[in-house]
Length: 406
Image 1 (cartoon, rainbow, N blue to C red):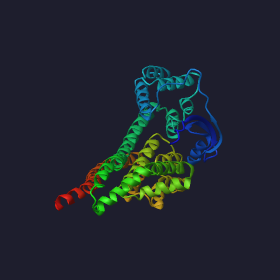
Image 2 (image 1 turned 90 degrees about the vertical axis):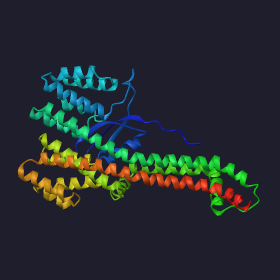
Image 3 (image 1 turned 60 degrees about the vertical axis):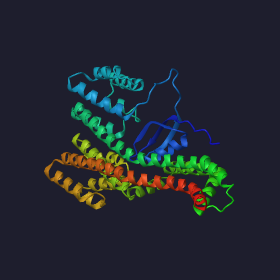
Image 4 (image 1 turned 30 degrees about the vertical axis):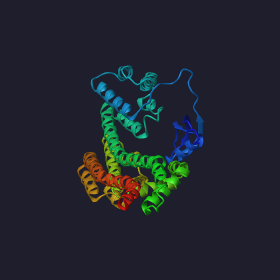
């Protein structure tokens, strides 16, 4: 029997990031070793990881999603644009939220702000909900006095980013779901249906067709060792996931391999470019210095190849190199993107040009996903037809053979 799944727990951690800055936060995981491995993957050297004790009366019911944070950002921006004071905006938005966990989060932030803290300090106490990019933009908005505008930009950015993620997940889910269903149907046929035909054929007293004999032998193997096959598949999937969490080299290998995968690699490349352009446009428009923004942009790309390229660009830009030159040097961005950035730098409208690039590539991802779905449908139907049809033909061949003899 398979072992029971290990439950995840909440851990608090403290560590040092790539810049030597002391950071802390909370993270969900199975044990402290996995938490430390995950932090190292994110570029944080963990100093202390401790399991979080459960509050006496329960912290909250419900789960806070990215959609909740997006709606919160939009509501706060609307309230502040209408002239409602910050603390009162928190009160209105928090009390009106249906998600109890989100309600408690908002009221906790409100309490911190009321106590005299800045908004970015209050938000930074909740790193699971508000990432470094979010905090940096809020800091820029507070300093420039345009917080409501920044919150609008953040909401728009998160809406577009989540829509992009949803498209890619949808493209991956469809073929995986069909393959899983095909595998389950095949197992049922092999274990329960084909043995009935096997009993029928045993009384024929004649040699079975080669295809039928092969299928019967496969059915016997399935009946005897089905648990080994399922165990091997589950073990392989679990092993790959754990290897990606524990081994940075393996995670890098997977990221690079996915970018070279037919069709899917093209979607992932375009998605990474769209995220790069959208994140940088949002941060640049908020007044964040370019070099400072590049670190958050690198993490938002979602792929180690683009992360390394953007970090290399950041180092070159820090020495005075133009962004267009740095992009050409890393040799990973299409010429069209480099040209748009060059025009933006020359005209002083870099954020506008990057937004256009993001719009273009987000549309490209939409079209590529639709094309992939259209391409996969006939291929999957053909594979299923051959698989199921082959099994049916193999079982009926002896019956046809008997009919010909009679």
